[in-house]
Image (cartoon, rainbow, N blue to C red):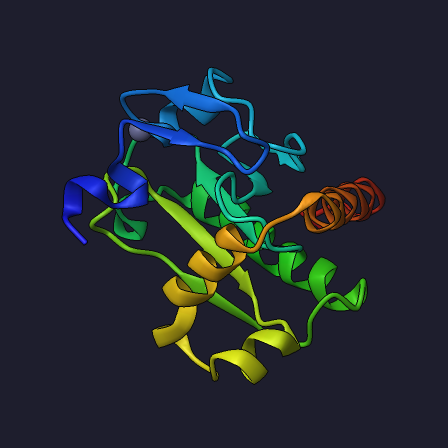
Length: 174
Ligand SMILES: [Zn+2]
């Protein structure tokens, strides 16, 4: 896939609810609320936002979007890395304590111009259908997009609500 088509650098997208968005930088557009991610924001911190992946309808597939337009973990200041670290911990705990998955895969690619972290839930069906590991993430994502239906999307939205409740009940800075 060409880098300019790479999800992190595209100039537009159709989200999993079928809504079309255009932007210069998706990360900045999410920060400025010019793009509303499906299901809404799960956690809005000082330095980062947690929400569902806007394009791939998989229950519990989350994205941490750093608010500042930077590319790399190496550019984070102390306050940002504290908040992002805590956000990763609590997002993973939410997925596990809500019994959505037992395992996740974290992905961060610096070829994306705006720093974001994927928290990919390793559901059993994925292992059965594709196998385990980072190699299959794109295939799994494409499969989820292609086989999406109303029931599946409802499951994704219900999961987002459960995770929102989890974040209301937990202080991530503790
Ligand atoms: Zn940006």
